Image 1 (cartoon, rainbow, N blue to C red):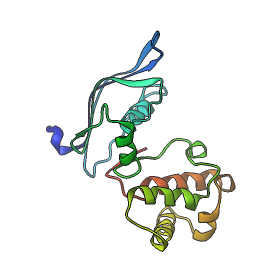
Image 2: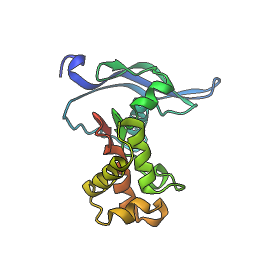
Image 3: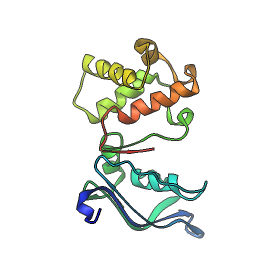
Image 4: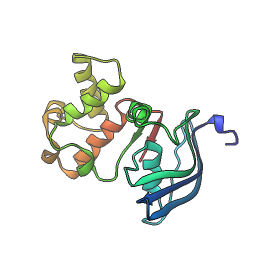
Length: 182
C-alpha cells in the first residue's frame, strides 16, 4: 500500500517513551506499519518487543507514564498522535476497538456482562431501550454463547476463562469498529 490515504491505519516512525521527567526510556523505536480496509495484519515479535505498546499507543492508552515521543498514528485519515483524551474516548469502542490479552482484567468485576455491553452500545450507537438488549443478545450469540439471558446477567467471575474471552470479544465487536486490534 503506497498512499497513506488508502490505509485505514498508518503508523509512521512511531516512538513511545515511558518514565518520569528525570528518567525517560524509549521502548518503541521507529515503528512503521500500514493496514488497509478489510486487511488482517499480524505484528510478530518477542515478548517485550513492543506489540502491546503499539496497540495501546493507537488507542491512546499509554497512561500517565507513557507518551508518543515521535512519529504519527493516522486512522481513517485522522492524525491521532496527540489527540485529546476526549477525542480518543469517542473513538475507542466505536471506530477503534481492542481485544485485550487478559479478559480477567479487561472486564469490570462490578458489572454484569450485559451491563458492560450495553454501556458500549449506549456510548457509540443510537440504540435505546429494548433495542440495546436485543443487540446485546445478538452479539453474545455471534461469539458463541447459547444461554443469552444467563450470560447477560452473569458477572465476569461467574464465567470460565474462555467465556470471559468471548465476552471481551463481544464488547470489542459490538459496535463493528473499522479497526480491531488484538
